[in-house]
Image (cartoon, rainbow, N blue to C red; front, side):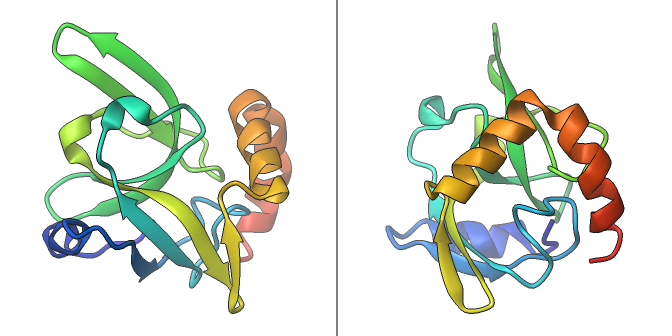
Length: 146
């Protein structure tokens, strides 16, 4: 999770160019670690977001959260997204498409750029979507050390 002014980030994301920002916290460990640089692309169409995608969204007044979408519900008020950190036990408060600033397309760890579509990232996506109860047991312990 990275706490920064979401309005400032939103202004940057209005352009066509992806924006980099430093991650804070361990809620997305092992996928994203504190001090990794997430590369976020503006979300043009929230209907293209799928479970497993990592999105940057506004939570509260001035809190920007980057977590994995785990469920999407279609309701009479529109699509509702449910997310959680890979290293989190609980789900985030549901949010709507207008709260989404962008989608993480890659990240930098130790100066190495890693695509969300890499084999490692596809494996983590699958593991945390379908076996999160198992994956969390091991990573929660390790994540406390980061």
